[in-house]
Amino acid sequence: MSAHPSLKLLEPSPEAESYKFDRRRAERHGVAARVTALCEPESDGQLARIGSLQLLDMSQTGMGALSDEALKPGQSVTILFPPHGPERGFDRTGHVVRCERKADGHRIGIRFAAAVAAA
Image 1 (cartoon, rainbow, N blue to C red):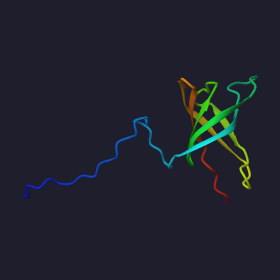
Image 2: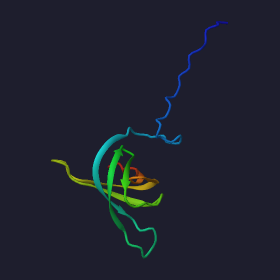
Image 3: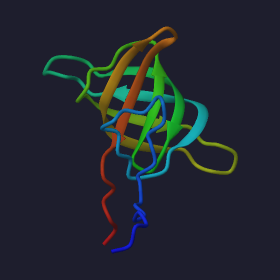
Image 4: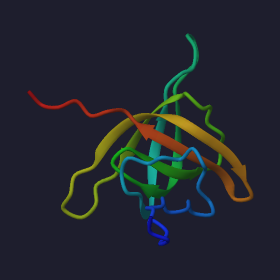
């Protein structure tokens, strides 16, 4: 047998701020913008909440944002993106997957609902 060691492919180590269970399906891009969040009521008789989020990063499958108020994990939310230049505004619906208290507010993670393919 050969005395040479075999080569192995290694997975890149995660970034310092990423979680060990963080397995993204799409590339994340840093973004600086304000968006409006429409939080669905958690129970009957409760009103929907509207708030502003500072967008931090975004991908095809979700986004990270900073909020003054905490949002409950699992809560449904619709994000209203304003028009930009000649582009029209759009909405994305998803649910809160993470809410962490930080010195500058609450860091929110939102996973977008799967898009429905056109027939």
